[in-house]
Length: 564
Image 1 (cartoon, rainbow, N blue to C red):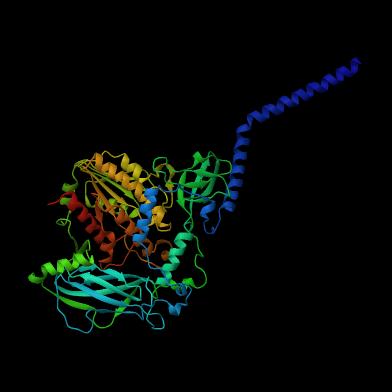
Image 2 (cartoon, rainbow, N blue to C red; image 1 turned 180 degrees about the vertical axis):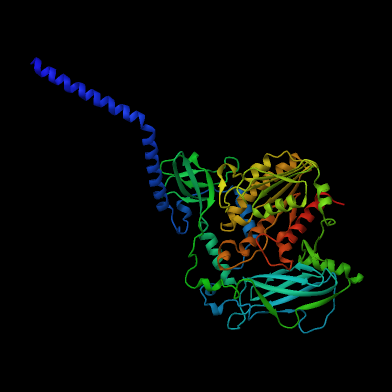
């Protein structure tokens, strides 16, 4: 018995020694094991996230999606009135699925200056009327409206141009009306941007596919990371959601929750790959370069007139005619410079005068890349402005420039989501309304706001809600600091091709532009009419207008900051 106990004791000692050795090895290498484990898990879930990100999401079912709350009765009434104000003629039922040959063809269409075939003198102060006849590809007259047309009156020799107003008679004919504002030659230009059948397609995908430009966010904690889909509305029946709805404005934003990470580990926001295959059947034929996207319509007869000096006896008559037909452009170009109508004297600013005008001023700029252009222009124009390095992503911001000699401060910040920039740090995404509420304001404060382009893929109601919050913040700012100058920038025309048309068409922009003008009408704000300034100019349309147009915009603003 004693012999067995001694033998057993020996084995127990060996076992304890091995156990202690194992524990010592485990504790000494635990950091390495944790690192390997995290790397393995991170790689696994990065792979999983790629699988879970849909390549081509199906049309959004709002009944099974998490979106914002319903508007109040007052907000719903305003929304209805706004939507009615921008209502576009719907095509006839039988025209929805027509063949290409039955759609609007700019090559077969024509316009004529009225009175047709008659002789007439035109004077400064009169109005010029043009009748546009839209025909299909077989040369037959169209019997319904809804085409998207642009009209411009210009003179290359005088460096002049003005936007025309297009009236849809809903029977295949349109009137383009121009005020005659300069003496000399004036040439008419009419462009078919989209046929009515293409507008019908654009309306459908705007309502059914607001997810056609997806968004995503990176979540990360230590070595563990995952990317998930984000948007204003996300289906609730697929995965748990992270709710990033703004507590002050109620603006919604959601991301799918990562598998092993919490919602507060979000690092950034980015635009995902554009969704393709949005068109069905032969709808692609409605979006062809050189065929039915921004193609000029030719005149029947002359396309120009000679404008004579104004008749004094006709001043009152022509003024009454302009008011009765509502043809009141915001301005026009003459000798290459924009001349605003009804808004004071336009000045031309150079380096010295711009510096003196901005002396002692703080300029805040909020919005998309079209207002960032203003920051870049002013930063180049004023020589003593030095951009402060905030280590911000290129073209994203925020940006800041300081002129300590003349006490000038410029600041730019992009608006909150939805925004299609490549990568925005999550903490830098701020809503314009919240930023305005943080301003003191006053006579030394100028605020620029431009927000439109990134809302083109969403139903108009989304844009109305965003502008409503900004409008309330502007009213609060002007109430507490009435000397603040608030400048709104409208949408502008841009170059279109078959792909851009589905995401950023000028038709989407003109709808948003109508909402912007209506919602801020009557407020003490300055509207820079980028739409007319790009339409009236001879240079090609571009999302980011060329420097000469930006200069005219800035001259317009500074003329209000420092009026004569």
